[in-house]
Length: 88
Image (cartoon, rainbow, N blue to C red; front, side):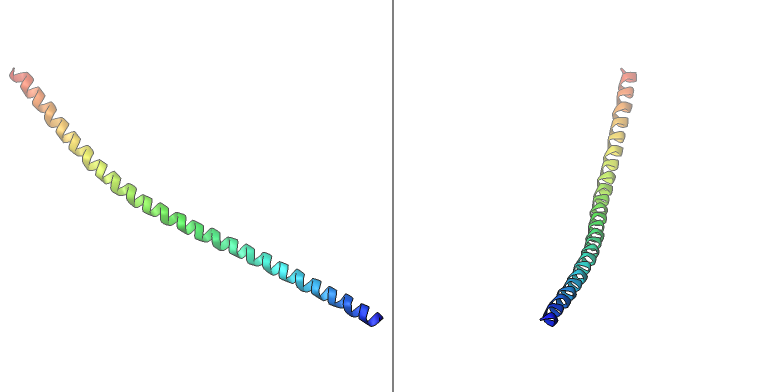
């Protein structure tokens, strides 16, 4: 009977040790998974920022060309107004 009790205690201790090892392994795996998720999240953010940067650049170029067009049109109209004011 004492052997059975000792056997059960040893089995319990061994099971507890294995369970603790499994818990540590899960915790380590969870940490690694969280790190991987964070890296993937940062990569996705950089990709999104890159695409927004490209879009912003093309919009800025379009606005720049439009601004120069307005400057030329305004200058021509101003010059025309000055010429008409002198003429009359």
